[in-house]
Each structure stands twice: as structure tokens, then as C-alpha cells.
Length: 471
Image (cartoon, rainbow, N blue to C red; front, side):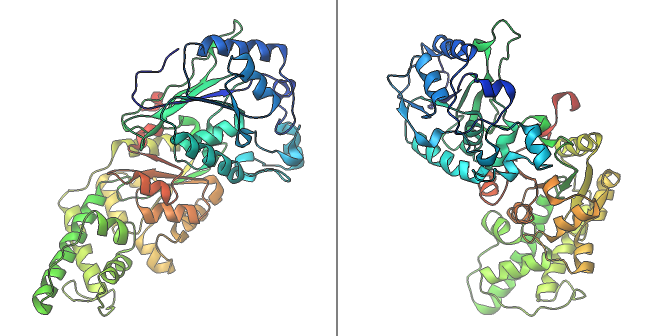
């Protein structure tokens, strides 16, 4: 087996072979159990699978089941023992089955709740991050022998995702997986997942999951949004469901450039236009319009009177400028310059078929008009928009209040709701609100910033999250 179809190094991940506790479903963390005879047999088959592959480094967990798998696979003499590769410390839940823990603690889920007397997902992620950092400095292929929960969190962190996303990456005993890069080191991917062909014992083969996406990012299976875990999905409007993000961006630029030009003529200051990349994303994207005006003006050290919501659009005040921007957006809607994103609407329809409730959450006062103009108003069980924000005096994004209010409207706990956002302020709101999953939508080179500010995963098209048979 070789992996030379790409120019960048890969990390091969081998889970240890079967033990008595893995067959019975018991949590096996620090307990140092031997492999079963079947576990040893499948570990030897890893030798056949990996024999032709050459590795710059081989690392193994110090626990016996991983060490023995490493030895039987033919890499014992080369292996470096790495304490960071040990399994999740299950503390008081060591040796217990999920059903036994459920009786003791109803609703428990390891990635969200951690283990009393043991580790949380964040604790394991700190170890995984150290391993990721060390491996990224190695310019050739590397092989790791470790454990299911650790490797799942390691893979999530390799991809730049929240450690809790490891819950969706299942691993069988003696499974082989590969992570690496696509176009470059800024594009981490899964190249192979949970491949057990060598360990089939005559059973139906499990071919594994290969991931080679055009943008170099791994999507997660459609089961990410299963009803057993979530009750509701909360969608931002502009840039997520509809193309109004471009309309808003153009309106912000026209309004601010007109104002800045007139100010330049009056004060003699050099005209510095509104920057659609830096200024839009940093100061106004996803925020209520008056907040956006305040934020941008503060960045230029410009002080204007506040005005009132009734201020005319030609008044040089915070509200006047905001109203001018709103006027430009309404004109664009009236002219038919707004359309929906097909992948996003496919996702909305799909999650509704799954039985999840759906809301749209937007800072725009034009939300209802946009939904009507694009023909998608009936798809949503609730709407929280700029009108609601004003009526209830809710702080705008990045405060989580609008999303929390939407979840309450749908009778969904934040931990059982998904936030879908394209704006930095929006993913910050989702993270601050403690939502169960925050999905970032990258419509133009903001993937890394979305991840850094709270997105658990980032996609370029929400259709990626919809099962093939549903598209």
C-alpha cells in the first residue's frame, strides 16, 4: 500500500486490535488489557497492509493493547512511545458500558459531558494539539498507534474542528485511517477513514471513507444533523440562505463612500474608501445596521450625533447613515437583485423532513420582505429579525441573544440546536450561546476566521451536509 499520489506528507492512524472489553462495549481508558486472539490476528494483518509503506517516524501509546498492535504490525523496533497518545481517561466510568452510565446519569454523552474523575474532551484535545504540532513539523509520512476516542479527537483537531466533532468519526478495532493535506498545509483533510479490509475475517468488508473535496476540507456525514442529537436548526439569512450579503456589502460601501467623500471635501482629509474585505467583515457584517455604523465610524475615529430611527437618510448621524444603507438595500430587493442559494434551501427542506424545527435569525429589518420576495417564507417555524431585536431591545450579534430567543421560540435547548452562519459576529454568537453545533459557511475565503471565532466545521456549500439521496 503506497500513498504517493500527493505531494504532502500523511499521518497514518492505526487503532489497536480487539480486547475483551471492546467486544463487550466497556469503556477502556487506562485499564491495561491484552489483545484477544482475534485482536492479535488483525494486528498482524496490519503488517501485510503497511509492509510496503515507509515512515519517517512511528509513535505508539504506552498502553499494552497499542504497543502489542504496533509490535505485531512490524513496527515495534522503530516505535517511539508517546504518553500523549494514551486513551481518554474515563475516571469513574472506566470499565462501564454506555447503558450502565446512562442508568447512573441519564442523557450523558462523553464528548459533551466528559468523565468525572477523568478527562473532558478539552483535556484530551490539549494532548491531541501537542501531537498535531509535533507532526506538522515532520516532512515525511508518520504512523501512530493509539486508541479510538483519542484518534477521533486528534482527527478533529487536525482538521481545525472543535474536539466535540470527534463524536461523528467512529473507529473500529484495528482500523486504518489517513489524514493529510490537499492543496497545501493550510488544507488539512481526511484521506481514508475506518478502513478495516485487512481485518474482515471473512466478513463483509468495510472499505472505509475516502475524502477528497475540491476545497480541501472534510465534510462530515449527513448523520451530523440526526434528530437524536438536535431539535432545531437556526439559519442566518444574508450570505447563508440568500445572496443579500452581497447586496448589503454593496449598500454599506456606497453609503460609507458617499459619506467619506463628502467629509473629505469638508475637512481636507484624504479620502480613504470603505474596504469590502477588511472593513465589511470586521466592523459591519452580521450586525444591526446602527451597530455597524457605530463600529465602522469608531474604527476611523469619527464621531457623529446618534440621531433617531426617524432620521432622514441624508442626515449625517449614526441613524441617518444607517437609514440610507437600508434604503439602498430595499431598492435592491425591489429590483429583484436577491436570490437564494440552492444548497442552503436543500438543507432547510432536508432538516424539516428529518423533523427538526427551523428558524431564520437575522439582524435585518428587511428579513420578512426578503423571505417573501424569494418565496421561502413558509419554510420557517420562527423568524427573529431586526424588527424583533428593536421591539425586545435584544443586543445584536456577536451577543447570542437573538439565537437564544429563536431557540426559545422553538422550544429547543441551545445544546440541542444548530447555528448556521457566514459572519464572524454570527459564529461568535453561536459559540457564546452554548449551541450544540456551529456551522460556518465560507462564501469567500473566510474559513480560517470562522473556525477561529467559533465554527465547529466550515463548508462552502450547505448542500455538502445533505445526504446524496436527499439532493
